[in-house]
Image (cartoon, rainbow, N blue to C red; front, side, top):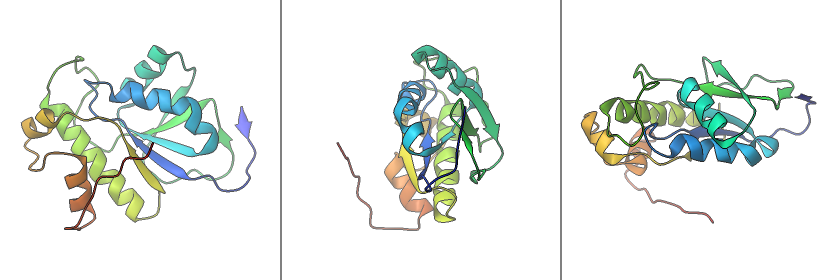
Length: 164
C-alpha cells in the first residue's frame, strides 16, 4: 500500500541490537507504530528481522537495502527497509547465547549507523539492547552503545539519555 509523498518524515535508524536477545523483537514491536510517523530503516540482519516480525504477528515484507540512503518518493507501508552493514553472519545464532558474532555485528551496526547519521542519511538512531559480554567476546574494546557512539562521533564528553 503506497503512501503519497507529503511532508518529510524523520528517517530513523532502528538498530537491531544483539540478535540472540530481545533486540529484534523490540525493534519489530516498535515498527508497529513508528513506521506510520517516520521513515524507519532497520539496521540488522534481514532474516532475523523477518523472524521477529513473524513472532510479533506484524505482516511486513523485509526489503534488504545496500545503503542507508532514503529511497525518495512514495513509501510502501507493507514493507520495511533493512540494512546489514556487517560481514558477521548472525542469521543462525541461537537465542539466549553469548556469541562473538553478535558482538561484532552490533559494533559494526553502531559504527555504520553513526556514520550514516553524521552524513545526513538518517536523522536519529534508536538502539535496542546489546550484550556487553558478546561485545567483549568480539574483541570490542569499549563496554557498550554510549562509548561506541562517542568514539564514532569523536567525542570525549558523552551522556546517556532516557526519554519516557
